[in-house]
Amino acid sequence: MKILLIVKSKHNDNTLKIAEAMSEVAPVTVTELENAQFYKLNEYDIIGFGSGIYYGKHDVQLLKFVESLDNKAIYTFVFSTSGSARFDKNNKKLIKLLESRNKVVLGSFGCLGFDKFFLFAICGGINKGHPTIDDFDAAQNFILDIVEKYNSLKA
Image 1 (cartoon, rainbow, N blue to C red):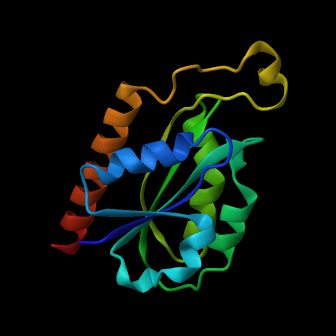
Image 2: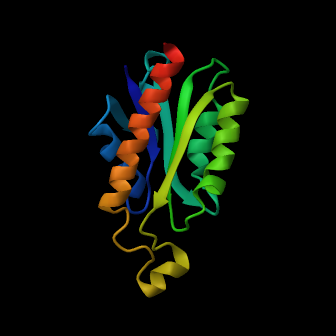
Image 3: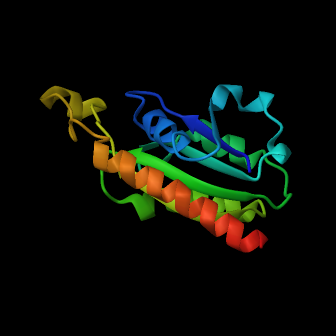
């Protein structure tokens, strides 16, 4: 099994840290969005798409990348880090976009991330210390669940 994680992690590398935690327990290759064009997506069993959340949605460049995908059915999942705990709502747009491109979405993960964007910088940021060990553990359990779901669908 091969899993590719395509990550756009701009400000504090919160999302990249989550992707790297996932790679510790599953056969994952992590690449930043800017390098995704160098990978043959059809060579991977599962592709995860993740970024920080900006104004309630994933990074615009990641959304544009997903919009450019062909309509070939592939297994995917979504992940994010955010200053707010509205993970399901935040991940919804990317999930719908993937589904509109004929992708099978196996799951969605989100956790808090240290956020010092704009007004939060004045007070030194919010969610200091995030992602935490518990967030990394949750991300690792999530990727193992994704692998299990995939294996049960392919059995």
